[in-house]
Length: 593
Image (tube, rainbow, N blue to C red):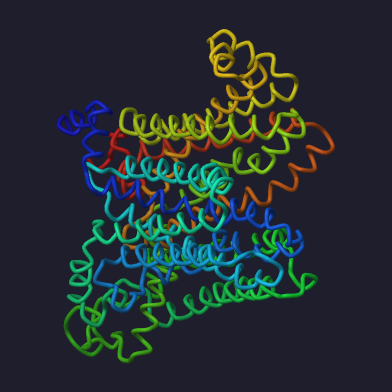
């Protein structure tokens, strides 16, 4: 314990610098950039191109509703990314084969878009290419999250890699947003998207040399188990018939979700504007049902399976019937995989059910705390973000140029500062302390906007006292711009710290063997709350005021702080028994020692 304590006392900056020397850290920055760039280009900047085209009405733009859907429901195809290899590319590695392929597809789609002039006659092929880029981008996100978990080690820790990923992502948001707009003003949209496509292609080729989890060792370990590569047919595991029933239930639920989303996508591509469904209405109405079908109900099935297994019910017996020996799951056993169908069932069970049973088996009842924390941690900025521009432009009456300077340039810089600070805090004071601090700061900085809503006197006084107002004035701005920039800086630094800590926390509780599915499922829950809360928040703004909304979001954020403290205490008390795959090194309590 003394040695461990000495290691934990290592200065944070020294640990950060050691991690930055690792090649995988550089690739994490590159992959973060690759994840953020297409998201900015196809979900934001592309609409500016369509608006400039002048030939496309808003109703026709409804076809692009399927683009956001790819990101919203990317967890639906995450099991395939964990288990399926791409022919001729699989030698690159388990994760890298998908990362490189997705990046090349994104780059190709963006380059192809640059050769099409958007109009009502070309909107079909234009939307298909944009949809392809979005689908590949969402797929890339799932695999990059899994890659980060797989390659993390004692030097390039999951906390550092999570922070670096966020920094790359935010830099890409600036490049794909503000920089793309400036470039389009000077060289035109086709040249801008052509350049962005070439950038993604370059990233894809650079990714060929990225490290990856040792797929050969993983394959060798599975091969050593013969006919039972997942250890599902040994003594103490659930009976095949019980597993088949559970798999049928989960597969039926996931199948319904896939069909529902697929039908929506097909209808969104209809050439008849009146036949296209409303994406906001679809996510609001069907989103919760899809999450219930793919997360909640399968989790209940997994909980029952784990409970029955631990109680010794419906499990494979230790002895082989009518013969001596121990149950091994090999061909001599009556429970062995005797056909291709049996082996296919094992593969599907491993892809759909085992990620959930693993998560629930490790966390137990604490899964309720984890899910509640995931649902509420980013709720303040997830809900409020939609109303930022109406607040700045409509309520506060700032100009577009002022908002662009304060939010896009200065704001992104503040966000990067927050991410860097979050990365340092993760190594210096620990993951759970940083997670809790991030939740508190993200909630309390809503009060900055509450002050702006009633005139901004307190924020302006602070800006005056620190000399920030003078600095903005020296650079050509005025007092009002300084006030807005100060509020945005406070919030974005807080969001940066919280974002770095939250990604690190999620990455710490997923298993390497099931990282793609588990991370995709947990991260999708954050989308649910943000989507469902925006309607109620918009109504509250109409009926009351922005000030009341910011007070409410501050109070909601404090709920996440309480959950962080509960999870912090749980991990500190239980140590390795808490079920966290990558425990916080600053929480030294371990009952096992």
